[in-house]
Length: 234
Image (tube, rainbow, N blue to C red):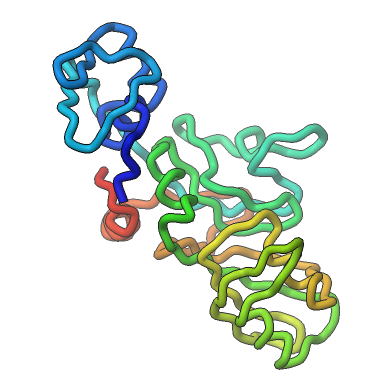
């Protein structure tokens, strides 16, 4: 789905000319035209419009990391809570894609590629995220069935998903949506409290044996599959 009309800076970012901020700079310099007219900030592009960049910005060197977030670290900076970028040094400036609440731990994709955020988090696309969840008390087979069929909380019903038991109080769950603290809220709606939540996979990217607070670079075939699934190119 192309989602036209779209703002000119988003269009240029989607076409890999520049980031949205970089696209704004190209527009300010008068280097972008729409149907022969110089573009201005805020212009919108319709499907079929002729968009020309007089001096194409060099492609950014994108990097992608699989990071193992520790409990107590936040993907969104907040007072009194440790921030990923403050506790872990990366070779280049990157940001977390999506969220994982401070009490949870596990896989976070870190990158400088803003295109990934749009494709991975947009409800228009369906991408799997797998978690291992431990509850305070034992649960029944009925609980697993209910989680898989979809759970209503705060007037929202989760989509049906794959869920299976690991131990008497631990289960795996694969989601294709990402409401805030969704798994915890699903469990609470079924009268169970989560005491440990770990994300182990995002699409084809797995946590493997990355130590807490450490990361590995995503490269080669693994990266190729990841980007192809998002309909992106490096």
